[in-house]
Image (cartoon, rainbow, N blue to C red):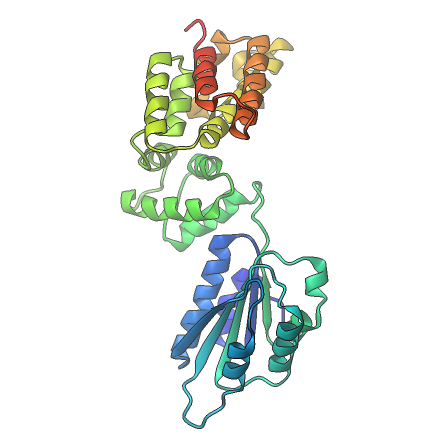
Length: 334
């Protein structure tokens, strides 16, 4: 049986299958599905739990012994296999297939893998689990799907939020579901029961650190160059890596560039920002930057972003010095 993550709770309420395979690269969803299976197993009397890490030249004999150790007085047990590669090898494949075809009544098998390729999903052991047990393939949440996922997550936490707040949170976590879940938990502490707005999201996310890359971007848009350079030094001191800062600044620059292109074609600043999808609360900052920076200047700054990216990857330049230069360029003529 193949299930989607959202179908798992209903299945578990009806009883446990002998084997489960959870696969995918979305760490949060993989972990939550595994937690749900563990909770269901405990509830149904599987009090013993053993975890095996299947890597390299793994010795399958301890698992074979566990799977074949039948006793009248044996405790019901959950065996977990952490198998990132999804490649059990010949010995493991035969063992998993044999267990699925003749499962022990006192044992449930839980396997966690990274994303599986098509050849693995056609393997006999995988087909045996899908036929006799449950597979839960987990696919990444696309950026276009992220606001809806966040909205559902908020609802599960008995929270509501304005569309702008959801869009802001989606923008700041950018597909990192673990970060999104952590921010939602934080918003529960801030919330007073009324709908969460964008200002509250900005406040909560900014509380992650004394110096905040998003706050740095806002200062850069406003042309507050001295404050930007102090904040950049603070971020460096707190151990924030250059790629994080570059990602935030380059995202703002790309938005500015799209607006500047529209303005260059004759649109007003207001219409250009609306066409580029700039939120209302950010329009004053974007407008200040657009009045200060021309399209050629923005082009040069984006080229500088590419140079910083190369520096991060080892080109020989100092990425921190180049970030200083980028902030000076953003504050040009302020």
